Image (cartoon, rainbow, N blue to C red; front, side, top):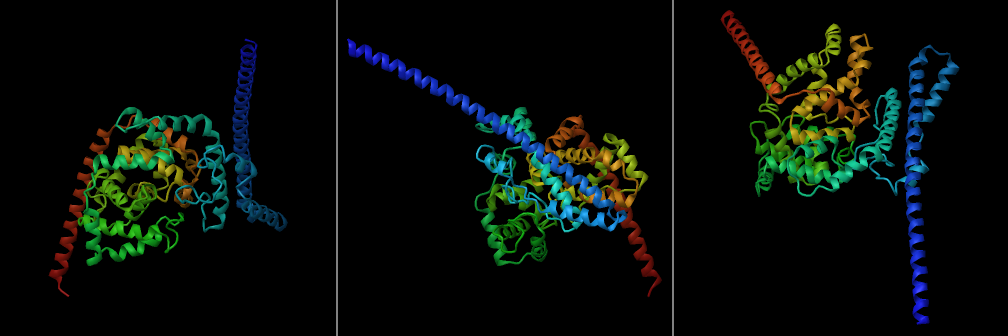
Length: 459
């Protein structure tokens, strides 16, 4: 009996110790998490301070021509020193074990191979690139616990994918990188079922017969996603895959063959889906299902129609900005035409671009209109402060790459711009297509009359 009592006492003591150790471990884990988040917040604040400092340097850089030589040299040295700062910090390396590395980039490339700090050729823009990288990093660090973690938890809880209002909301918020490939495959297969053996037959055809578009494809390959390490070199592994995808599509859809811009669409599909046949079907899905007919035809007639529709929406949603453009005779289609043709590829930073594509692949071209309007809304006040047509065009050439807050842009696109009914978009497209076709017909008649007149006059 004494032995039993002794064992009971010992067991109670050990259980008490285990309970105490568990409480201590839980407390330490919670404290560690709190410290990590505090460190992330401090790092975000540090990024903000660095960004503000670089912004001040940029303002001084603009004023250099009017400064004495000694001050001009000092500003130049400070800028060179700032550009040589290593974005990586010891605190970040410690955090990388605990926080998702995609939210704390410690590399010059992100998980898809895009440069985290753009390599602008123009010297004056290098400082802007540095500011941009710091702002993006700061936004990601600040949103880690409040936004990104709950969003990831919701995605992790999703099993089989089925269309729903909840899924639509989640996709609009952005698909985490670890789920993006699976969701994109599902979105493509819903509307464009791969035909077994079709892609291989197209490849055989492209090997046996040279397509008329082959030369243009070869010219465009080196121009594709030059800010991505998987395409920046002629020896990159994805270049041959991209070539095969584009040639296969040229044979698959002879009405289009190849159109400049398809290379960018296919390249993004390759980066995410990591399989050239799936990338091919993704391209087919975008061109033949998501985009209206004739978007990539020789005349690009539907692309032209969409530019007219967009100007209508810009006048209605952002009347002050449109009036400003009209005052300085700015034709926004010179900027926005390419946005629509390639769904913002090479216009937005990679993180925001892929979030746009998430919604675009699920909802269609209405998303492109929403984000195009949101981009102008995001920068509206800055544009309104410019009172020179040349300066406005110069600003519009690069201003999309200065957008760093993807959450803010998303809220503008899907909340501030409501309502945005699809019925209205269809009606506007129909109206402007009739007008454009009538104009083109009139031009053809004028051309025919001119040719006839010249023929009658003789040599």
